[in-house]
Image (tube, rainbow, N blue to C red):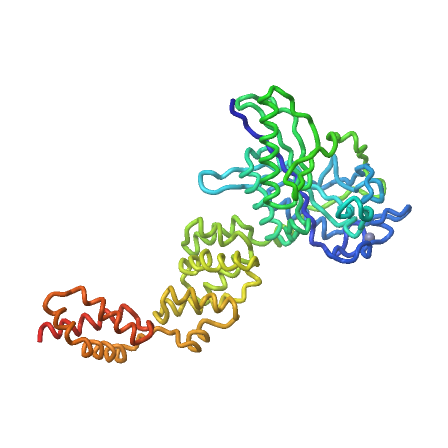
Length: 482
Ligand SMILES: [Zn+2]
C-alpha cells in the first residue's frame, strides 16, 4: 500500500526590534543571563504591558509579503500554562483574532511551482530559556529570562505540504522572505527562526486525515529534514502493522537524531485562552497599512523576474543569485562595473559560491569587493589573463583582499600578448630547431605542437597561446613558400 504525507508547519520568527514587545528591555542576543529584564517581562504583579509599534509594523510587512488579509482589529489573549521559563504563568499571544490570516507562499520553480496556503499570522511574546546541566550529576537547571518578551510572529501554514522536500523549500522561502523584509535574522542556530511540524500519514486515496503528531524543537534545516523523514517512516510502520498513530507531542533530539514523546498533545481548551484584560484591542488603519506597503523592498520573486528580464540570464541563475538579498546586491554592483551579466553570473555561481562554502561565510564576509571581481573579469575579457589563471588569481584575491590588477602586475602573471616580442621568441625557436623545421616542412605536421611548446617554455608559460599559434603558422608557411 502506498501512503501520502500531510505536513503543516508552524514557524516562529523572532522580530528584529530593538526592544521587547511589551516593555523597553533590549532584545540583544548573547548577553549575561537575566540582565535584560524588568518587572513587566518578569511578570511582577501590577506591571502593565505596552505594545511595541515596530513589532506590529513587522508583522504587517510579513502579512503583505505573503498576500495575507490584515485584520483592522486583533486581540491579544493569554495562553495559560506553567513552565519555569514563563514567570507570568501565561504567554501573551493572539488567538481568536490574529493580526492576519490567509495568503500563501509559493515554492518550487517552473512546472513544479506550488502554493502553500497560510492559515494565520499572529503576534506573541517569546518565553525564557531553561539551561540544563550537561549531565544530571552536575549542577541543576537554571533559567535565563532575557528572552522573555522578545517579539515573535507565528506563521502557521495550511496542511498543504506533502513531502520533506517541500517542507525544506517552504522553510527556505520563508527564511528568504523575512531576511529580505529585514524583520528577522533568519538565523536558526540562534533560535531566531524555530519550527514545529504537524505530521500525519494516510493510505493514498483515502479522504480521512488520521491523528497527527506535532514535532517540536526543530532548529536547523537538516534537523527538519531528518526529523520529518524519521516521523513519516515511524507512522507508516505503525499503519502497516495495523496500529493507530497516537496524537502526541514529540521532541526531536538533534544530538541523538531520534524522536521522543514529550507529552500527549494538549488541545486549545487546555490553555484556557481569554482576552488579556491588560491590553486593549489592537487597531490598525488602512492608511498605515498602505504606508507600510509602499515601504516594502523588492521581494525575492519580483527580483528574480527582474533579473531574468533585465539581464537576460536563465531562470536558474536568477534563482540562485536572488537566494539572498546580499548576493543579489553583490551581483548588481558587479554588473555596474562589468556589464556582462552572464559571465558575472557564471563566476558568482561557480567560484564565488564555492569560496563562500569553503570558508563557511556569507557574501558580506568575502574579501573581494564586487568592483574587484568585475576588474578580474575584465582582465579575462581583455585577454590579459586566461580563465585558468583567473581562478588562481581569484583565490589570491580572496585570501589577501588585493585587486586582480595588483596581483597580476605584482607577480608577473600577466599573459604576454606583445606581438613583436612573441615573434622574436618564435624566430628563436625556429632557428634553434632547424632540423625539426626541415622535417616539418616535408610533412611531419605533428611537430607544430613541439614548436608551440618551446615558445611556452621560453616564456614560462605566459605567452598567449592563440597568438603563438598564429605567429608560428605564419612563419612556417612563409618558409614553405620560400
Ligand atoms: Zn522588560
